Length: 166
Image (cartoon, rainbow, N blue to C red; front, side, top):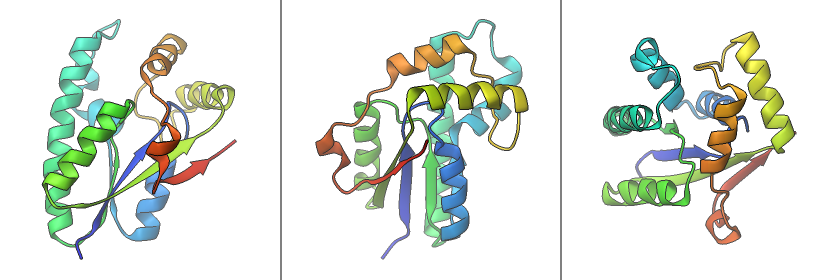
């Protein structure tokens, strides 16, 4: 049986990256965190204010490279943990199709927390710039991401590992 692709999803500030790192350590897997890739590869070039089209194009490039690298890690027999921002149902379905098309075992993990907790976490992360900090998420960007995010319907959560924090 091939190693599993574990895909972490949930709203901004829910604890996805922390969950991904903890899970990777426990399972001896490799975590791929989209925000880290974006910050390292494109952070210095990021326009102010951030332009959606500029960002989405680069997210797509990072995601393609993450999938390519993750495939090599999986081929070596190591589990993969993806925190790649699958914010919308269509994004999650696209990931499912990629995994199925490649014959990969897929496990989704849904991480969530109340909005006021998530907003406070993001504000704190912006100030502390600690281990899980990759990019600054000001309040207007948080609100924008909240508008893009599509919570999973109950039928989408069948077979999904759910983690709710507070």
